[in-house]
Length: 91
Image 1 (cartoon, rainbow, N blue to C red):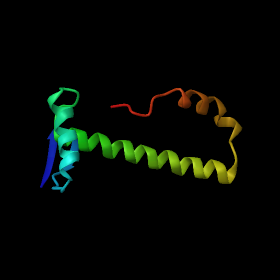
Image 2: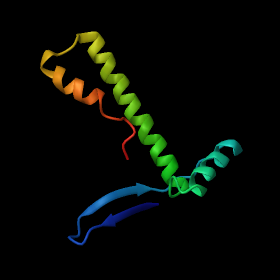
Image 3: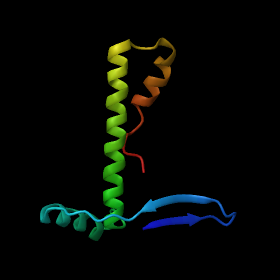
């Protein structure tokens, strides 16, 4: 099922697809604890954040492989230094 959110201007701001997943009871309990504590708003939000975190980790891993293969780029040294100070878990 596709769900879209439209702004007042009529442009689509986000698209999502509803899926079903089976998780072990211990993971469901962990997710429910996060939601019950108010730390995260919903089960779906927990899963979304975890998948986004994994996506960022894989991108960083790919970038590292490129740097290790090609060597550092001196033009990006300042950018890299700043990026290293930025938390990876930004929501």
